[in-house]
Image (cartoon, rainbow, N blue to C red; front, top):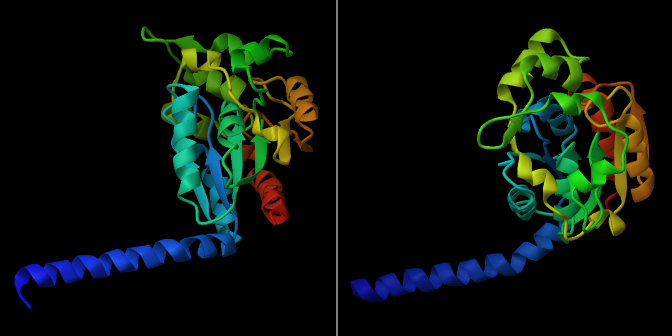
Length: 258
């Protein structure tokens, strides 16, 4: 066999193996245990969920924490969708704060079995976070968001400690301020094309002492989407101050996946 025929045989073999793997993939995916994809909010990054991730992993759950670009709704939905596509089976999609808008849109993916909102926005189709918020009770921390010259929004360290994460140790709040992800202000005006909570079962963790999204606003949204509700006596970041309780809600959603 000459060099060219040997190369052809290798390529043919690789092609046949690739085709066989592609045919086997759907069966493997259907048998896979549900995994969790977590979408962080504004003024944070994926590390905001480190405590909950560890608890879920200890329970044998595969977890991916998305790193959102926070440049637009479309950009964050694309990042979440890539993470969803990389899972072997069904997905429980979790969103915190701004991440609630992201999972509402990204949840249309057929792989997504359920949605978990944590101190989050839950807009309807045709709404943006901005338009949704106009009809909801306001929280005091909103007035402390600052914009840079390019329109990216952030929270000063003192305001992270006072309004965003008032129930975590001061040292931890300083780290959260330093690792926060600024969000492009225009993203809050991006309208959703779909609201997957109409078709997917939802859970909602309400933070009773939230100073970024008014707790009563969270209750209104939770009722609107028909979510299974858990209330916790926390700041805007229960994943930081009560990670075991938040993990319990996510595990309940995971257990419900058929």
